[in-house]
Length: 110
Image (cartoon, rainbow, N blue to C red; front, top):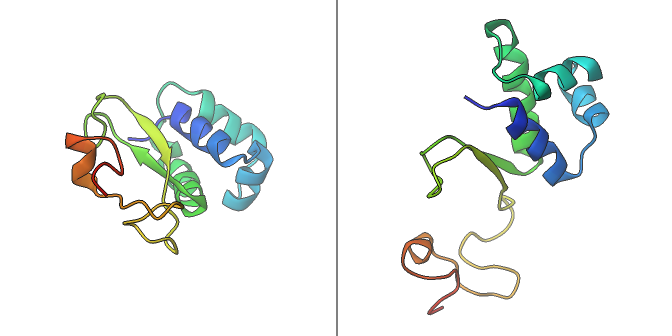
């Protein structure tokens, strides 16, 4: 489950204000602030949290669940590759393969 801290971090990575996110989701700024500061989301807030996450993911972040996709094992958030950008090259046309993350730095051997 996505945490309020992840939502706050995602929003900041994207350079979005609470007002911008709240407006896109249809929440008040105070409701968004409460969700970001909560240790755990309440059952009745699950729908709002899902809408917030969808807006932030569409804007370009990926939420990382604990011990699912993070080698460090903790919750997190990262900027995503835009759908319009090639997945296998970066801005310098360096080949980017997921298996290189396990056996060497990105772009190694490319």
